[in-house]
Image (tube, rainbow, N blue to C red; front, side, top):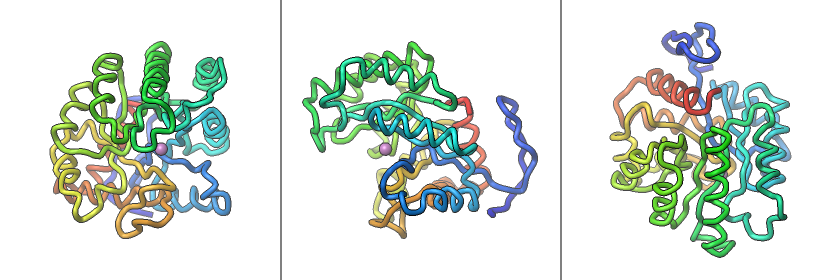
Length: 275
Ligand code: NI
């Protein structure tokens, strides 16, 4: 277990007992992935053992969203996010949005996601991606839930849609990658920036700059397991326990004690996701 300075509850939601343990959060994982079929329970236990006491399991289509709700029901430390990711919007059944709405009403669902635009894979026409993105932003607003945004090679259109349809809505730029200029735009929309493995890469100068300059109350940490393993595990399967390496890197970049950064990220996640 990591040990460190004592801190107690944050005066909102559930109170945490005063403890010597650092609490870390992985705000984006796909433990339902087949990559964890052989050792899912062990991966969750390894996370808990290094202080990762909250894991947000993210759906990317209807089946994985349903699985996320089920995983959250089985594990006290896991919460769920439900939605359809842009690589999975082709061929959705009619009534898909109602299915997302029903899943969002299940216990421990804390946000709608991951949703957005992906022009790297282009698995669906851009127009269909945007229609589904907007429909789910609208649903999240209706349900007063935050959104988790996936954007790949689609920065300008993502910003255009978010400025138009999500201003004032709470949200997370999942696995933020980009420079300070892009970060400022996302922060201006009102969103949090969630840092993943790439912030630990020695040559990620733009991302290091963003991690230094972003307001402390707008930073989150995630693994995107099983993808995006941090240094020195780059290229290997990622898992929630590795979020510790991301927290350590950001603390170093900001010249902050690990405990202080971890506590701030925890508080940010609690407030945003109402954990
Ligand atoms: Ni993801």
